[in-house]
Image (cartoon, rainbow, N blue to C red; front, side):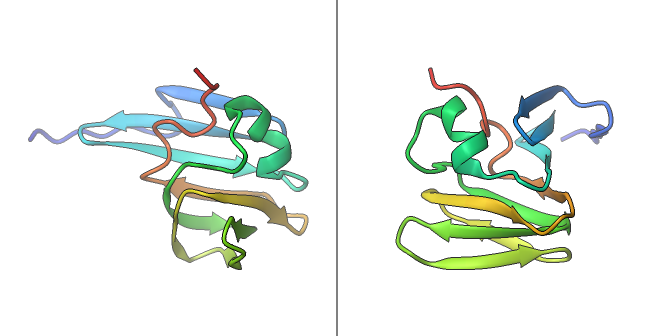
Length: 119
């Protein structure tokens, strides 16, 4: 496999949604995204109307660079994640930014289809 690199500062795509955005680069075998969610962002308010599912059905494997995010799973499990943490989140959740700092994370498993409109 050849060496390939891309910059998230010059993404292959950008998905805008209220209070945030996801920029993505497509590499062999993986799409990497940088999610930025501003204070006030909540999946059920800002992304749900775009994807038209009851909860986020995207799996996420991510590294949190900044901020805090509260995650509420459909089964009732809840947790907060923050800067410096690696996180795996299964499909079936809601999430929202905690505090007044932007939440910024890199996502390896969810970036390819995150916040794409319902087909």
